[in-house]
Length: 222
Image (cartoon, rainbow, N blue to C red; front, top):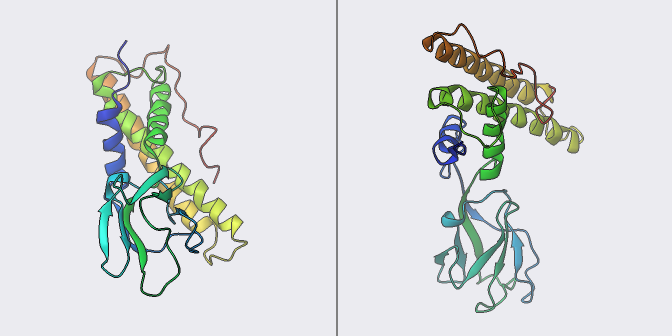
């Protein structure tokens, strides 16, 4: 059995979710971390930065160098931690030494998207990590998109709760908007799945398949 074609399917979900490697730009960001002339470890404000997109500005000359250069290295890509390499002077707090990063980030990591697709595989009655029929790819992708939106709804609800209501909007407003998008994506997945089996001369998915229409354990209850 062939493995799930993540190389093809992950970008499809990312495009539909508007979470591609060039979807979320951040310019001139001063990272978190002590600038005392000794500390070399800093953290970007957004998780899942795209390594190839990171550019570093430091000093009066405003020289930008890409990730992996002799100037800095990424320590923990999902969390956004990076370190200035020993070849560079640890950033001080001098006014003549501006320090900033330009980069793109994504809402979820590559492995997150693979997990979303695996849920789509299981919803279609298959085994996580094992490829489904190519004709079912559109249904699998739309189901993964519904998982994406439900996770966004859950994140928004948690964000509101952790702020103690300080972010202003009522929790049901952004969470419900994403939940509605999730329901729409799921409805599309059902239609695409059923259309595929009708074209195969079957009325619906095989009876041996395990079809789940509810929300999975890691999706939002909102």
